[in-house]
Length: 410
Image (cartoon, one colour):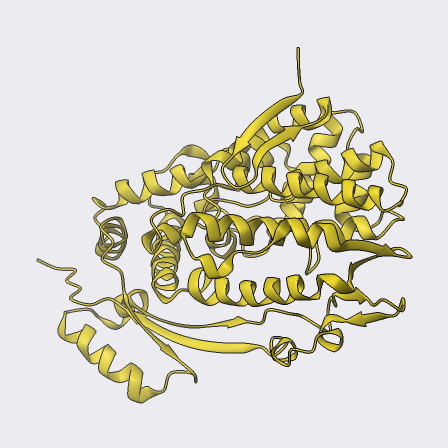
């Protein structure tokens, strides 16, 4: 069987699956599940074109990894074909642990388990199934491989993951301000010792990359309407979990019901072999099918929230520079009280939260620029644009969102 395949991608054109191992990984049920998980969750409530999936993104990140490693080899760096394949496999699998709607499931149904940890458990299970063919890929993913730059290419502030999702998310949302020159960024990558660096002539491309990331966060990932929709879905799942914990049998697929009724730890995933299979059966369709079923549930909170989300009757949202005061909250409570909601019910229809954004984490993971004289400088020091340093500052925003014209009783 020919396992060397070419996939036509709308962002990059043709993407090549260059080895039998990569083909086997793409064909595996763990990876195929990513077809059924949208990359941006509920973002299509704002940007109707944002329907691309984690499957698209993972293939795109693998393509960029291939291009980046080829560029480094052309600059004289010795990278073996085994290392190339391992790095391609690691970036291909880096999102396996994302659940339905990504961070929504993670925060509500599995608050004790980060998606990166689930990814590693799934990679190790794949490695067992493939008789150790992923040993090096797992080392690169974990950061234990002796050549550290491979991990930087998988997970850092200038990794293939970020390069693809910025370019891809910009493409599918139509937010052109988020577009980046991934090709040029990749051509400017170099190694200094065991460290991934950027050539000085790539400065402008890095600056554009950081500004684009900041803009995409405020215009897409943290868009106020998306925050409202995510808050509503979170409340739906919170209420469903409460009802399940109280002994009610809710309409849900068997595996989704298992996660509604139980709270799992990472140790559970490592010890219960069937739990990983249950997790892998979950995708966006489980959530939407359940929400559709819950519209007719007798619980007025679950029913109303589910119906509002399905019909895009989203909560009104207010973005603030400071945490909301009683002067802001109390009139909203009065409004909900006049609609007939008691104190308990109001807790589901009035939500406060905060969000933050900083485009460049200088202290945690600096981007190094190799100057013409060979010196390595942090991008904030190498750039003559003062706003780069400003991008290191955390910007916090607070929000209040609430249901308008809510009626739980006929």
